[in-house]
Length: 121
Image 1: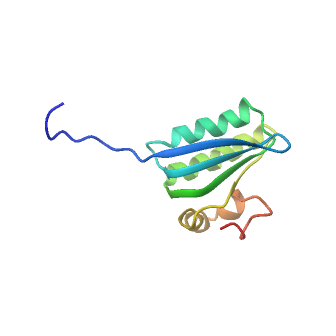
Image 2: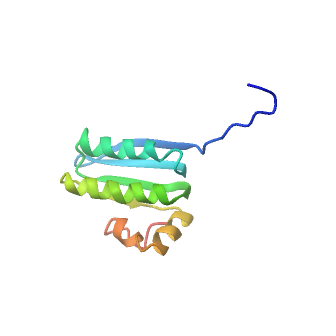
């Protein structure tokens, strides 16, 4: 290292997993979901589906300040993966910014749980 060297600072992503009734799992995501860290989210979601064999995975995005196209793609891919494994995956409580992006892409209703579409804050 030399004085003045610059290093990329990757956005922080925090993920917690909590059990829910009926073998479902809640995955809480906080921070920014970007190309640099989206693999962490994919790993957690796929483990919940494959290893834990959750009946459903609820992804809480209330503390996500930013999500890029790779993050959106991973959510869509994880939903498809869940369904192909006799499970389900949906988002709950998207932050206002995430809600706007999902709405603009026509994905809010597709990725939201049936009872939270349009009501989650």
